[in-house]
Length: 613
Image 1 (cartoon, rainbow, N blue to C red):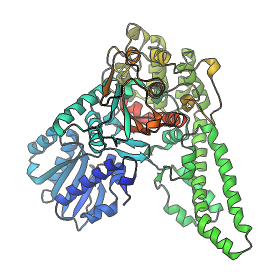
Image 2 (image 1 turned 180 degrees about the vertical axis):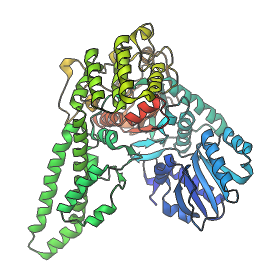
Image 3 (image 1 turned 120 degrees about the horizontal axis):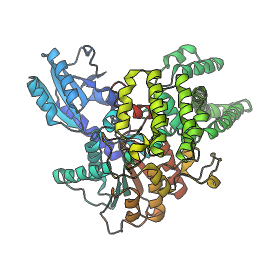
Image 4 (image 1 turned 90 degrees about the horizontal axis):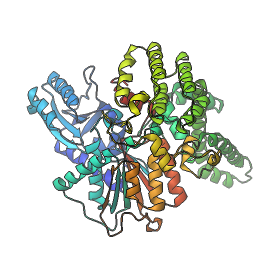
């Protein structure tokens, strides 16, 4: 078992692990653990199989609702590890009643809802079930990145992640001490802080500690910036996520990547049987992969040159093995360097093949033309007729409907609505191309003011609230925020050298700086000007001082304490890369925490209230 305490903020993971072990010890006998599929990878980060077996778990089984759950023969009990929801309670009632002689327990993640216990009573299973609650808390994705791994369809609901976010902040502060300075922007952030205040009353308010590793906390609302989700990011990690989907730091590459790897390993004389056994196996993407670590935040134009130079470096290092005259020198080379070279070689092959597939797929959908249109939209220079013409061509070529909706919603937001004639024509063509089932999606996006006619929006200044059921009136529009924070560079400031970026907008090829990243940068450089920020975000700003240092004073990198940036509603890999660059350029340590890491197509599906993703 890895030592959590030695990790950054490792006490949180260690506490989470010990609480779960305590629950296992409370439940006597040998047990099967049936885990909600949305929890599997996050749970694996906390407790591996060897630890579970030490505490009486015979097997871990993914939860299924389409048939009987197969259990191990030696298990005396069954434990369900699931997220709290009324629908899940109904599902468990059905499963428990189907096997009344089996002793069961339920561990509710985050909290035990009264509605779930009441559902058990209504179906007569409360006496058959032991109930516990357990907080999954912050899952370590990387040394500077933590996620609550809340499913996106829950995070985009009106209150889906409020309690979980507040509870995670309470847990963190209870272990490390109260954070001295807290900034909050956005309505959702304010809701999180109000819930946290209630937790202080119920569980106790954390005390200040000189050992607190975080000096400043930003609590930011995803609704402040959906443009960063709708735009196509061009960092390597962003494009891997768009193409294959990264889940809790792991990716399962598609068959075409596996085929390329099979051909490459075959050419290098590696046993094909060994290669087949690894097919579709999830690959961990973290800084232990030296190749991935070097390119994860790089713009795609800088990735292949690096991979090429790395290939030459590895080839030259292999060549050292042929130049030794002494057996002792060869022995040292084999024992000290050869294993590392083989590992780097495998990593390099994997990322070269993945890059090839990513670029081939983007070429198939004419990504360069899309990027030009997106940049024109965000710069407010786009001809809307050209935008809709491009969308029509995408429909004719049967491109993903979700990618088309991302583009048109971006155009709607940046123009405060779209001309009625163009929008109605688009909707007709869209329904004709992809089916009547999308009618409800279009209506939902319209209700959320993500896809609206200009006449309706012209008298309103409300910004679409992308994670709520209804938008909150009085929010600033995207064009206003873009201008206020100078998020789009002037034509004379546009720089095309992305190999050594100096500005956060490189993640969108220099076209746009993510709103929340710019807010953090402004506070780091100039201090917290609450008056200006209230004007920018229409008053949805709060600050809390828990120290003698004035909150408006800018953070000092000499204090050697971190800045924590908490994204309520999810974060994108583009924003993660931008904040990492900001930290690097200014010698700060920034810890990024989010309710989840956003996948663009999944996000627009959730906004459209699509039940089957």
